[in-house]
Amino acid sequence: MKPTVSDTSLFARLRFVLVETSRAGNIGSVARAMKTMGFSDLVLVRPRHADALRDEEALAFASGALDVLEGARVVDSMEAALAGCNFAAAVSARLREFSPPVLSPRQLATQLHSQPALHAALIFGNERFGLPNEVVAQANVLVNIPANPAYSSLNLAQAAQVCAYECRMAATDGAVGDPLIGFSGEAASVAQIEGMYQHLEQALVEIGFLDANNPKKLMPRLRRLFARTQLEVEEVNILRGVAAQMQKRCR
Ligand code: SAH
Image (cartoon, rainbow, N blue to C red; front, side, top):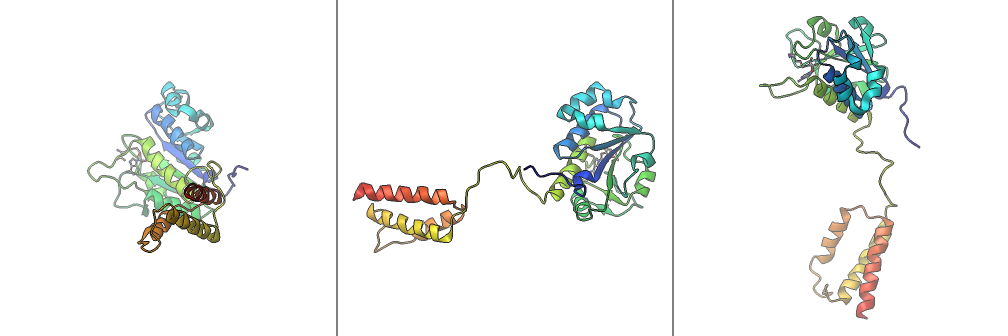
């Protein structure tokens, strides 16, 4: 069974808000950045092109995330964009003298994940002008992506990607890949692995590779090698099969 997204999971509690975006291509790219990380709630505040969601460049850059684009809402005020949210995070390249507490995307993601009552909006500014001061002043936190101090302004969609990625990592506890894909067999028991070492040792003596009177560090080294691999039952059986065949050949 596929894991489902519960209402309290961060995937259902996070909105991406783009304020006065100039380039429709960036809107498409943000949709893609969101979908690749499992997010879908997109709101645009006064985009420069009224028809930005149907713009050719937006559609092309969204690629396989057309559903996020189609589901996006266009509004004309911050108030409308934040309806239903109880936490606002202004995402900004610029640190200001007077600003709410500053967090990195990782710190923000950790906080949002650990507080399931929060319905949060990540608010991104215009490509040239960033976010208006009033928007930053209303936010609970300012999210800044640590970057090269000499050139710290990321492309809008790339900034959205970094934030979306960190939120995904927090929401999935850093899980890599799909736990349902990939073969994984039953782990071998200590007794099975000990039996394999004994069998292997005997076989190595019988073929003359291991000198029983002067074994040196061969077995400890082989133990160290296999200890790094988390052996499975089937693999232990294969290695015992190899040992048995070695013995058979030299008897
Ligand atoms: N010249 C603008 C930068 C705009 S980049 C300025 O000085 O603010 C467009 C948007 O991408 C920004 O409004 C912000 O939301 C996001 N962004 C870009 N770089 C960022 C960074 N280092 N940290 C946080 N947000 C960033």
